[in-house]
Image 1 (cartoon, helix red, strand yellow):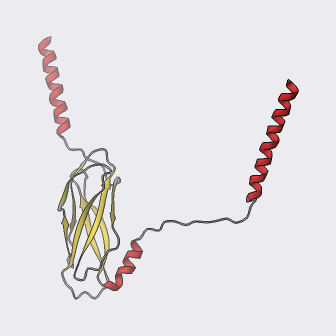
Image 2 (cartoon, helix red, strand yellow):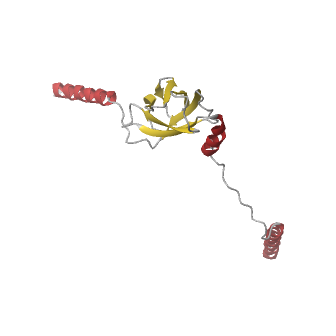
Image 3 (tube, one colour):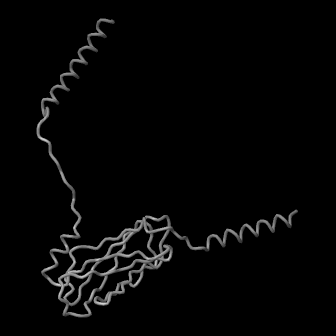
Length: 185
């Protein structure tokens, strides 16, 4: 009986160790967030773009990388990969962007990036618009800026009169309660 119990406990211990050693896999990129910090300077001929990234998965992501396979724009990252990205901890990567051909006739260029991590099933495609000329900087930065929102003010209604009406109702109720207690006494 003791031999069976010892074998059973050894088997459970081996199972627990093997389950812990497996890396966690997540279904998708729904809890991974990134943001490019503005302003983005013109890549004439090179520039740096800071990218802030964080996630809200329950455990740490490992080897978070940014890759690019653009033919017209060369990209290198510093650091090359984030070895461990803890949940809700914001970290930054600097993308060094350099034009391979400086004789580009366009004012902006689309840079196709892909994000990857060991725990996520595939890479996530990200498209970044890079200004290629100084005249396109303002246009690109305004397009990427997030509006704060819209505020609407309604003029009219009761205004201060509503405050006086509510105050009068409270006073009337207090007088009624005091008179009622006085009658009961």
